Length: 449
Image (cartoon, rainbow, N blue to C red):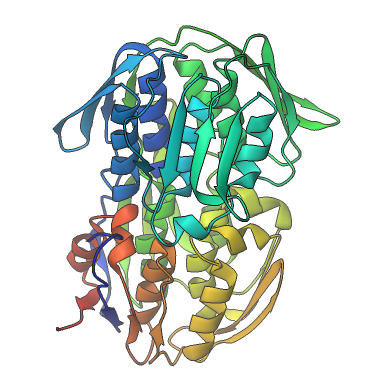
């Protein structure tokens, strides 16, 4: 499937118990960062378990365009021959980041303090998304950016010829913004400081340290203060990418709502800045066992044993939002099958993702018979209990992979089938979604043409 091609309508139907093992792909966030930091190191970085979804493949192509040698050796096995910090060459053509907000924002950061220019574009969804949240702090280094009205792609970025270090307080919780500033800080002299009021996923900090950067994290009255010393020589690494907790969310949530299900999802990242969904599901009464906790590639992982469960609605703590921001769409599906209402606050960041995810989920769930309340920063789902959701609607994916997968999970447990108008964007993050779910017994079909 390709988010760049023809629409692929899909339908999910009520399924029997899901059984078996779900080997979900590698973590998307870590895969992007492994390629980018590998390209900024001197020598060969070897990556295993790389997610080969379109988002990551677009980042690999971008790193080649900036002069790194990026080679695929086999399934998930890649190598990157880096050009060093400040060593990026000027790309000969436009950089197409497809559907990936993470990819384009991190790449902008990585090239922002090198005296080159690059023009970025993406698909129809990415070109609607605001880039000012990244280009504004990058301008503090001396970088210039020229895009469409509202700070949107296509956009040309002129890297700073004489970058200066910056001190920047991130105004909203965003790992993308934090990471872009830290990557830019690599080629600035002195110390670049990022301050977070609320901690976000920390893959960049972990990986920067792993590649040899001098980086400290301190909790202060201002918040979490991250200090990076610029102009290091990054050392190539062997990176083992753990399985993506955001992708694992879909088979996990499907198993919770499909009666009689019992599945194993091995090797899922349990990074505390990413596991908010799993904490929330357990609070709702989910039967999830976290087996064989261990560390792989510098990240905590565990095998998840998941069984169908009786669930209750809860109030999700607002402070948890940053650790599960990508999982609210599928959580809203689970909430529809819970008893009572589930209240999700602090979720306005969802309105500027691949789509307005609050609106997309609210309208689709309403069409399937679920009562919804929403505000700018709040989504409330009134649960209908196990087996209680009517379904029967054709929903819109809005070129958003997580919206498409969420509604397909919904349809596995509704009384009537649920369709999505276009499942093609699923390939950006979870290219094996269809065969993996079919292997568990899920009834998901492409529409006949």
